[in-house]
Length: 194
Image (cartoon, rainbow, N blue to C red; front, side, top):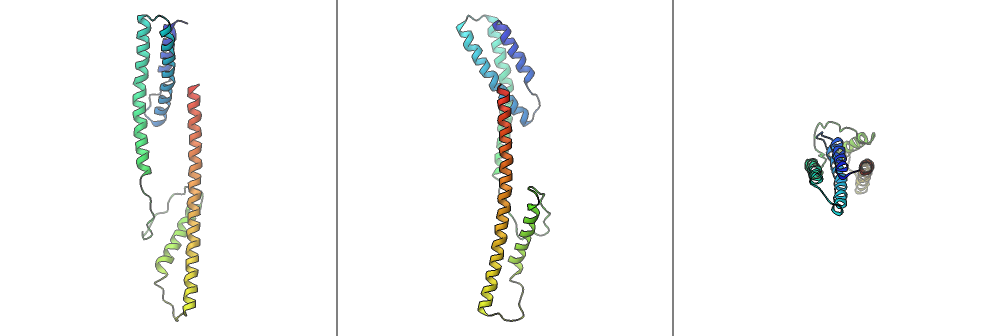
């Protein structure tokens, strides 16, 4: 195969493989495609340095390189903006307002543990805020008061441990899903490099 035919074939393959949609998946696929074709272009140039180049080969090489650059830059810019947006989202703080009234239930993320956590949080809030407002009819001795306070603290501790366990399960499920996505991306990258 002649040099011009090889370069023309690579150029046509590249143009046929480019995904022109403007989403993150297409940008990532185009980025990987550009990396693959840049390495192909580099190996063609190295091979042509050893042989004698003519004007037509130089024009085709320049056209091939320009085609790659035209796809690569928008893909990189889109990926960088997506990464910046994701980083900004990750830096937002999440908190729970124990004094909020009329909270809507949060969508379930991991099974039914979100509903249980919400119920446990509500019970904890009631015990923390309402426990002191109830008055007893009779005076309790010091030992009875200490025993009651210890029981309340044990209940609160159990609820907090259960809540933390739910958070751990959610984080583990999220981490597993993230690892699956990483494996899929690695497989896609390996498939594009072949």
